[in-house]
Image 1 (tube, helix red, strand yellow):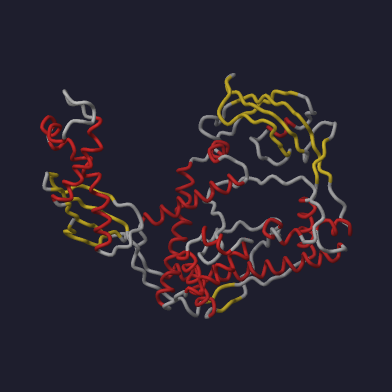
Image 2 (tube, rainbow, N blue to C red; image 1 turned 180 degrees about the vertical axis):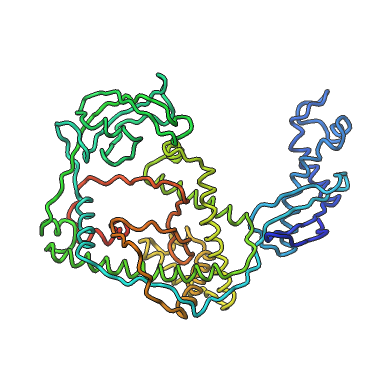
Length: 488
């Protein structure tokens, strides 16, 4: 293999012209022969037993060329990338240059590479930082979450009404024939949750255990293409009706759900938790705003491959998220009428922001000569083990040392930006949303040093999480400390 040329072109790409010489091509031809000979019929020989020269004599040497090229290309390309010390970030596009002969062939590979980044201002920046306040209403809402979490569902012998949970079998029919995604068995449907197509839950209301009913539904015009605007019939059988049994808010409740003996003590602890969480959120928002400025200030030709790869990762994270909620991905797409191509397209804008954020962090690391020692990595492993409640050696099996080192360096790079920055009071917003109804803000890209949240591409409708009905046993631990985000 020899590299004839290596040229930088637009969009952080490199064009490599690579020649595969006679000896390498001959080795690839021999591999191609061994792979293909069993599929080539030669009179007088059993399948796979005909010598290579006989086959080439009958069909020409070119019979193995295409397969030999496919065999030779990966090694030649990889060797060329290594020789030129390129940091490739995606798959290349490849084309042959000239004719392929027994003497070999030449090909051109255009590959996206890590871009050259020029760092703008990253010290002395200014960003808004929220002032933390906690009201009695905030504590009450958190307390309500605890109440909801410890609410039981109990069977009742009456008609189902809004707020109840109906356990149903259902199957949808279009023109008398069942359609895909329209069937469910022993499904727990909370009436009023609006998790089904409009009009369905309203008609389940009024059913009793053991009752069967046909429900007429017309799908919205903007629904999935196969069902948009279509009139269908759902055959529904109700197995059970359940209502919520809400616990009383008293000292006994506090004892059941926390380490405290009185409701007042529990409220005080919830107030403390909310304040700590909001202080962390305010600091995170401050850091995000600063790093967004740094990311916007860089100059780089970001290759499309990096953005597309990040967009695919966002969609994959979203797939994992809804799977954890018990919703099959394909069924989710069908229920919402969203195409995966639309998810990918919607994910490109936040993906570009994420890529630029990563590039900015790496540029700061380079500018500040930030490094992480083996001791730093070991200390970070210990923190991760404590965070996840795992043995250190087990954590090491799941997270590579290079990943941990990158995380440490990224955290230090962000600290450089934050420590030199000034926090200012945010501008007042026209309408202040409550904790229960957060303002619909644009998502900021996740940053490496923090534990990444599951990204959800813009345009996707989040699936609702089913509440756990079972009442929890008494624990000597405040429940909310385990899942602070859910409580908000």
